[in-house]
Length: 448
Ligand code: HEM
Image (tube, rainbow, N blue to C red):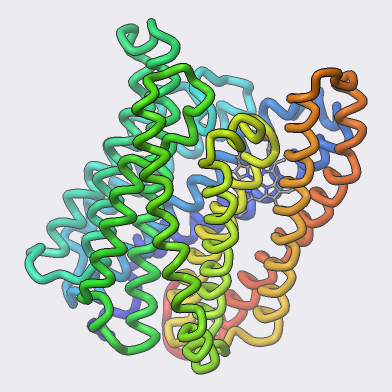
């Protein structure tokens, strides 16, 4: 690691800044969506739930993608001691992503859709994203130089970049009539691609956290260890084949479901590892817990544990039949993107903003606890609402839909309140970082 390159070049920092703006923007629309859960019809004339939901979901997904990209471009320079291969390619990539994201949000406001869940904007707006991603791949490979004797995080980044490109393109196969004409195949490919796409951005983020852990501990050996590579291969295996629970309800070939169920269960190995290493991680935690990025990574570990329990439960076909299409699925999606992805990205942002390992201050600590306790309540309220809805869906003598929604209302209220405090907690962490950064900037000329 070369600390002389510890100042991020401005363009990776632009990706992170834009990511942070999208996070704040996305959370505002999440809260409006939550309000629409408890006050159906709220703002319906100008901003119905059909618009609020994609505005929220796309903004937070782009927060994940942009910030992961900015983190990788900074860390790959630190790791290799080389400057980014081409700042021009990076600028073009930033421009392509930026222009498509702005147009996507404008389309949502104008009610112009045409895509599918998560990417509901007109499909042609994905073309600049794919082009930008190709530049990302070229620039990353050129900056790394050789792939010989590289630590695990370089492989994780490379895997994430390649698989994101592949799965993102795959999620658009439906635009071709050949794939669209058979609904079962179409849905199978669609949900398979989404499952693997999440695995791809996880590789991008987990790679950066592996790098950050080495940076904090000052020990590179773990990134070259056999165990690190074994875990990487389990992650890769899951990325490629662990999408079965997305398609249990489709009448596709039985062997597809059986294989993917078996693969899902390899995740138990990851679960076992977390439990096995828990004690050891507690000792390490005592050493580094005062560091804001370490704290956030530790929180992500707890969220990996909780979400893995939920995911393994949802991978059991007999349970999946009940939970499919309920708020349990929303809990799974938000639990992982907030608890794991966002916590890790905030750890990376803390590291990059502070430039030297930051203690974060009282506001950061308070924000940390507010965000995590709120997230637990938020997540549980969705799971309980989901279980109640599943019971209703499977009931032989169901209540009318409106009575069921009335029953869920108290949980939606809890969801809204805890969602708002969750957003407040995240903003507290960010404000304390920015405050610190402004202070550091004025002394040391550091730029984010
Ligand atoms: C870092 C912050 C957040 C991230 C990464 C995030 C992520 C997501 C994702 C991935 C979904 C799609 C879920 C699915 O389709 O199953 C979603 C939906 C949603 N989120 Fe968030 N979220 C965040 C914060 C919030 C906050 C603070 C609220 C406030 C209450 C909120 C409210 C909602 C609502 C109402 C939906 C729509 C659920 C539905 O379709 O019924 N989110 N979020």
